Length: 577
Image 1 (tube, rainbow, N blue to C red):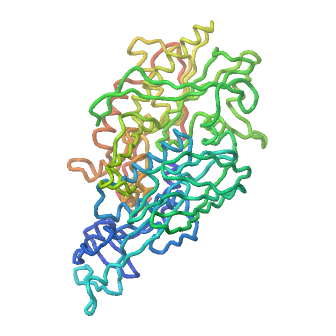
Image 2: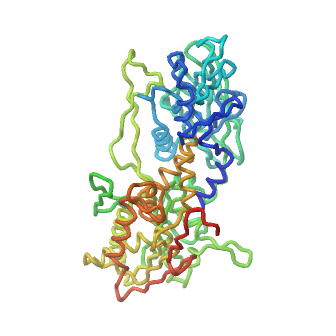
Image 3: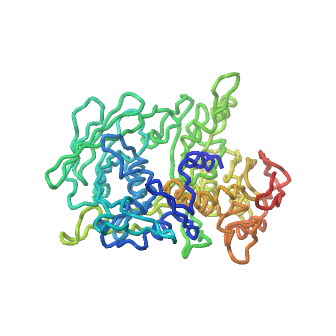
C-alpha cells in the first residue's frame, strides 16, 4: 500500500481532467472519452492525417518528456528517456514492428539485471506537432482549419535527440556499460553509427558502436554524475546530448551490489558465512487464467549461526508482496531486519544467529524474484533501422514473471521444496532441530498454504513454529479510489501503467484484494464490495477449504497491525466519514 501512496503523490501533479484535452492553452470538452489518446483522436477527426509526414503526431500523447520543447543541452535520465520512448510509441499511428514499452523495459532488465551491464539508449526523434495558430474549434469540439490557412500549414515537423544511461542508480565502483542495438532508436532517415561518451569519471572518452562490446566505467565517489554524449550519425552530422546517473553508496542493503557478490562469503558483520542458492518447485501450478502449468522459482540466502558453516537450527523467512522486485534476500536481511535500540542500529538476524554461543539460529531468507519463465518473443524492430531492404532483423525479447506478484499457490510450492531441502540438510548434518517459518505480509499466506498442503499430502514439514506477521488472511485492502485513479492515469503515465498492470493487476493482488477495480462495472457484480472476478472468490474459497496448519507439534503465532474483527464496514460510495 505504501508504494501506491508514494506513486500517487509523485504523479498527482501530472493529473489532468480526463474529459478535457488541453493544447496550446485551449481547452476542449470531450466528455465521452476517458482516455487522453481517444480524446485527442476525437478532437483531430477533421484533420487530414495523411499529412502527418513522420507518422507520429506528438499531440496524441500526454507530454511528460516534452520532446517538442526539450533541449539536448538539458540533461536527460533513465526515467525521461523511457517517457520519451513511451510517448513516441503512443503517438505513432503505426505501431507494428516497434518495440512496446513493456518489451523495452524487459530488454533493459535483461541487460542490467541478468547481464550486469548498464544499457545506454539514444533516441533520434522525428515527429509532427499541430500548429494551433492555424486551427479553430468547432461547436462539436473538434479542430478545423482556419480560413486563410492550408492543410500543409497544420502539421509542423520537429526533431530531437535524447540519450541516457537506462538505469537510475549504480553502485560506487566499477560497472559495465553497453550500447545495444535495440536501444539505438531512430524515427528518421539517418541512424547512429557510434557514440562517444564522457562519463565524467576523469578518464578518456569511450566509443560505443550499436550492438558492440561493453566497457567498464569506475566511479570512486557517490552522487549525481553528468554524462556527455557525442552522437555520430549516418549522414555525417554530429550531435550532442547529456544525461545524469546517480552513484550510490555500496551499502549492504544495496540491491545493485548484491548482484555482484560471490558466495559463500563472510557477512558484513563478520559473524559467519553466508551462502546463496536457487530453488525451483517440483510441483507445477496452473494459474486461474493460464492455459498450462509451470514451476515456480526462488532464490535464498542462508546466514549461518555464529561459528558454524552447516545448517543446524533454521528459521525460514519468506518475502511478501513485491511485484516490482524492489528487494532481494540480501536487502531483506540487512534492511528489513534492522531495529533501533537506545539510539543504536541493530539487526534481529544478528541477534538470533548469536543467540547462545554454539546454539544460534541459521537465518534463511527466501526471495521470489523476477525470472524468465517461457520462450522469448522476436520482434522485427523497424525503429532500430534494420530495414526490410537490408534483410529483417529480429530482436529477441525475454519474457519474465515476477515471483513477488505471482500466484500464491505457485510460490507456496517453492517454499514446499525449500522445506524439503532444509530437512534433508538437517538430517545429513545430524541435527534433530525442527524448522521455524516466519511469513510477513503475503509471506504468511504463502507459508500457510505450503504448510497445510504438506499436511494434506502426507509430507512432514518438521515445523515447530509458524509465525504469520501482518498477513491478509481475510483479504487485503487497497483504496478503490486509488485503483481507479491509476486506471485513469495509465494512458498518460508509463509509471502509472506499470503500477496498475504489474502490481494491482498481478495475480497475487487479484487474489488478495477485497475490492478490486476489475470487479466494479462488471455486469452482475455488486457495486459495493467486489474482488477481481475469477480470482478473489476462488482464492478465498481455496484457503477456507484448506484451513490453517493443524499439526499438533506446531505452535502458531499471528501478529497484525489492523482490526482483529476482520469485518468490512460497507460504507456507501462518497460516504462522509
